Image 1 (cartoon, rainbow, N blue to C red):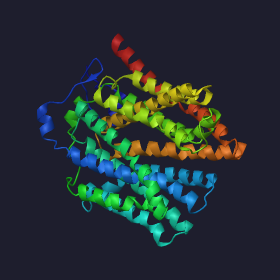
Image 2 (image 1 turned 90 degrees about the vertical axis):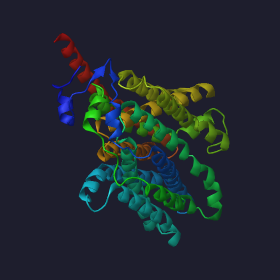
Image 3 (image 1 turned 180 degrees about the vertical axis):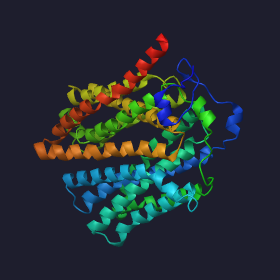
Image 4 (image 1 turned 60 degrees about the horizontal axis):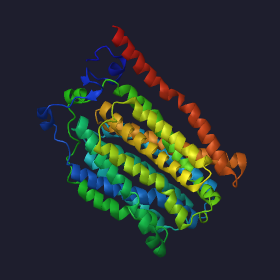
Length: 432
């Protein structure tokens, strides 16, 4: 089955692809041998270290602002929203930036400079503790640097790998970064005893280790042969990618609005006080569920190329959120968290795979993927601010969730359009 007359393929600059029953046909062994992908072990080591750094920075910055600088919840929401906007803009710009620097700075060099700058920025508040302008500069610099980092890493991860090899590499990637982000949360209490600013300054030594590993990478990501890429892309991948691109930021809008709701919901269930150890542990159920889902997707291959996967993701996100909000008992609420986490995992893995498969593993493809995540981080805090403005601090969580669900309901309508386009195309081909 070929797709030579497909408008979507023409728009994406792709040629014919060969597919059997919706499954991806793998490229020949010979084509793989010429592509020389980067060492997976090196990329995963960089991923682990970068995720530890990112976890320390993104979690630590709000801890620092509250404890050292006296930021109110609304100030933190504003900071989070601005950081999300900067993240999106930087992620969208990384491909253009690398092309502008072509011949002067390689992707490997750019990655080293980015992580080095990020590390130095994380140390800056130690030089002038109490300076809010310097803290804001650090936060925005760290947001931009982390956004520039991941598209390059994702290109090194995927370039030269196709089909099952790419899915497996992304599986390793997902099962590396998710537990790594928890490491800073374990060491933060120890760092805070010395100075709370060290919770974000942890990025400096970790980034230095990552730079040492980056030095072992080739100057550029491996070649991504066009013929192999065509053979490893399913017939409906362009539409699946578009649908996943809508679902990804919506998932992050929901996850960023779920956090302020959980303490209240646990209090209603009679579980500890807000921020106590028991409810903090229970709240992590959705993160554990996300990790298990990513692990299962890595070890199986049935999910790709199927609309049911994205449908299941959307239902799990909405159903899980609704269950958490409406559950009348703790077991049912915990089930909602588990379902929500599964939806997050399905969405993330699918969106990353389709982005890199359709986008030929280019830095721009990773940049678009990360920019969509940043969009979710930008909109989520804005909804929190709207909740505070509309209902006041005490009832902000409920108002925020109401806004989030309303926005999600309206924004999810375009999710159906790619599916309907793909279905019409199948019908035309069947009747021809």
